[in-house]
Image 1: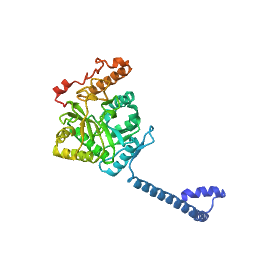
Image 2 (image 1 turned 60 degrees about the vertical axis):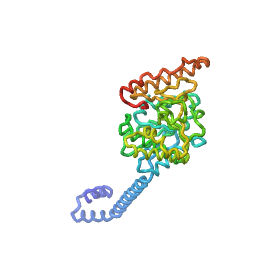
Image 3 (image 1 turned 90 degrees about the horizontal axis):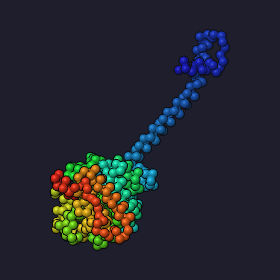
Image 4 (image 1 turned 60 degrees about the horizontal axis):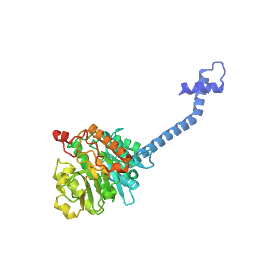
Length: 386
């Protein structure tokens, strides 16, 4: 202490140049240190108090954050969305989900939902083609105001925020949905059943929904083509002529469901049936339970959508004057799927520029499937609806 303070005090006091005696030095040093001690003490007290208060407020801040959901904002939207939601936080998930649904819903509480993972979120990939179809379709641009993209991983959520204003993150602890999920792998099964449970929660919140896979192109507003009195409507890989025929081959990639007690109970039953039929995916289980007496006793009004309006590569809608949506089903591999989706968009762009008389020609139809070959699926052993 003396070696630091004494020289500076000597310079300020202008001590004489003559060398002092040892006693004088000791006295002078002791006196000056006693005079400086209160200032040093005060300075140390202030420093200690400042550090203590800083630690206190920092601790309180971290403590409070444990009880708040994480949020991230998009530059394209004033709404905030959760960056990550786990299965261990149902209260946070339902609260934030309700906010997004409320912002995106139509006047009758209807929303359009799609899911997205990293594989389909890459630039110039599935999600870009999906959104483009809304922009060039007939009466579909306005429907983007009611579309909510459900991100299955963080990369997909970040990409969604770049492209769209209504995004919800459904990141699940213990599951990795960021890669392309090949049909009937465990990741695929987990993702499909997670989707069914999520759709059930949407119904529980009182929202009707149109669920659409992102590899479905929207070319015309589908709402005028839905059955007004049906509770549950689903697209088909193959349609056998009657909307009430339970033997139609459905595809769960496109559904229109109204929120009521019948549909809520049906989705609970559907989700719980995964335990009755382990190893089956949601669509196979649906094909079993649609004949179940429980569903009949519910009084669920179920309808299957005609492929003339809601087509796909399994059974394309031949008349572009009637088509609402086209699904890249019956297709193996993401690159093949993207190739045929791009051709769909090109065909539609040409169609809308044709004179009215030409549009009615039976020769005006799709060029697809091209790389999405049904024969290739049969040889591979993969299901038609992949």
